Length: 404
Length: 171
Image (cartoon, rainbow over all chains, first blue to last red; front, top):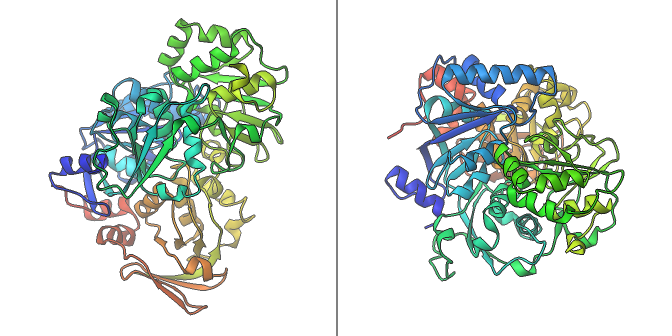
């Protein structure tokens, strides 16, 4: 039985099947400064509640427009702090980091937990073995107030990873490779369960994979914890899965998603030479320690091309501190990178490095829709931290293996 | 619950960024009604002026894909959209729409046959989508009773306020 169906069946004390409408308790619920205003509006002004009726873990994260770049954002942050204090929520304030990363780092979710976040990239938390759903503000307000949510049990597609990655190829390239599948529609509305040689990608890379299940249009994705404990044979039961995809990791090349859509996937080699104005390394997709390590390894002793802004934003205070202790930050700053506090800012065009009309960025983030990172007529190429750093050094989209 | 309205035809892959760009979420963070002039502005300029109350959006694949922002279905409802019929929906957009009482229906045939201006009819309980103008009718999965109750009350918040509890029994 697929892992998510096992979680739900155990929680409900009865076997569930895809398509069943279930109502489940929520263990962890959270929102950030992009979505919390509407959550607060629903709880305070629409439901008119004085207190939470739920006893689950609940947190607010100030991570999107953070530290506040505008008076409006400052007012939202203030309101969030007041609400968190009044309703008994935990609060991660400006500078602590991006919600999904903090949930993972602080062990706020674990295997079998049911997690509801007011952010579409909440499935990142599936790397912990939790059922993690990214939902809207009303869903989150209800889970926060009453402790429950509804779900039509999704089908599960198993994605089996085989072998090992080539040098300078990262989890991000695997995510982009999956987005480039001709039949990528098979993930639509389903759960992606990863199996096989998971340790070949590393936990940080696996979190990139769970993160980008959102772009694959999946309901969520999950790494069953037993998959990390031992190498699975692949002969284990496949019953209950609606489909299976096999990925030969050794065949994956450095990839990009060309503007203006995440499905415009191509190998880096096909867009090499495109001139770049800005590079961003960070976000809930690629702001983890492994990402900083790879960026620093490529940047060591080199300089960012004159005329290119290369912004680096570790995903959390812990990633920043660890990168500092290991010397990555020193390398990146000496190479000419701009160090940003942990924030989502540039990824959503909220603040810290917006793109002007006609500018081109290589970004380690997860979306490249028109206007995503600034002007409607700016362009974003999604890529791995290795490709992003290599491109910052040359000023053109560059295969990172030239720096190997 | 039967909904009838004039079709506004849209294509594939209309994301929540298209419905309302993320930048307005921060610019007008305190007053959602200020975002109304920007709804679908890059798809149909001045969309909000062209909508009549009760119009039904008929779209292709992946309607509402992308960000979880609930502003997207709320703003569509605010400008007067009565329902959305599409080949498929973003997972979160679909949930959000049910939660706020905007009927959303998956259909296979009508999204291909309908043109803007056609009269569209949706029977949520029986699971029927009709293009009255073209004389095309198709069966779709009917709404589960829980959805029907929530949508007919105008959303989950209205449901809780009117009936004093969650729209489902928990055991």
